Length: 174
Image (tube, rainbow, N blue to C red; front, side):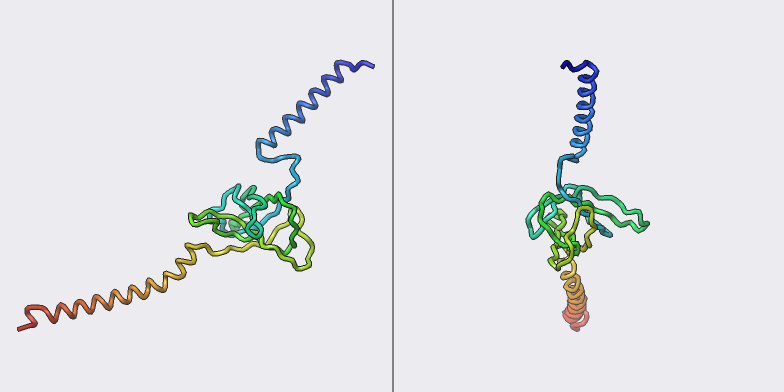
């Protein structure tokens, strides 16, 4: 049985359209054959977090940040889409924590898994979020009281020098 030219042309056109759709999505960074899971977390401030930043569980990279966008709540909150490639199961009560990835200030997200017997998190769930203070913030907290003490010492040293100058001044000696 011979296949007509119209059927061959239709198969070729449909195959070409499917290939174009697949390539277009691939170039956008979305793989149609991908089985990764998507989770969301909302933050008041992402502090320099960028797309493609690592997502880790217990220090092991299991995914990346796919997208960051504003939430339509008129408060400026940001919704972060996390793309997880690993099949590691964790509770829906788990937490997405924004932290500094290194000394230079790169940001990443750590999923703090909760094993509390709650149902497992499913693709599309919104995880609770928190912010882990970074090294610069911790240093700032520790140095502020020290700065105040140094300022008091400087004022005392200034008054001491003024008194010493008045003792050794030529006019006060006579």
